[in-house]
Image (cartoon, rainbow, N blue to C red):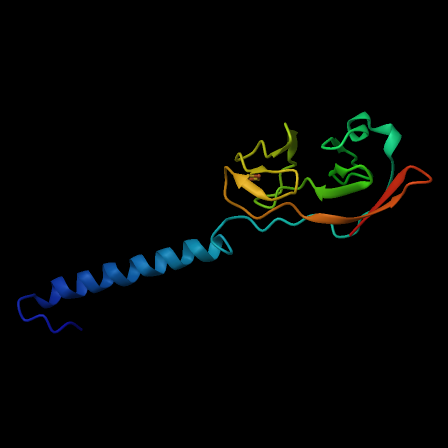
Length: 148
Ligand code: FES
């Protein structure tokens, strides 16, 4: 109860009710969004893909990006240096839509989240970065193996 001497009891009760119910509503919305930045979709948890680099012309140059999805798993490989590659899940961490290559990064067609070539979120729908996989290069064979 309030100790306001100028307020009627019913006014105070209504005010307290509105204050407390607003706080509960905000708490409920934040809980529904997990960490408050939306989403919670995760990438595949069991990936083991072998990729022949010569099959993807985009990976012939540093900065090139190619979708190398295998077995239904949407994966992008980014060539970051002459002998370095990184691989990311294309499952949007916001709500699970497949993200597409967009210029030198990625964009989700669903709510517009954008990510750079390092998988970090850069704009649009606020969410976390793309999940990254482990990449092992076999330069003799000209292949990379992507694993979780
Ligand atoms: S699913 Fe919402 S931004 Fe990708």
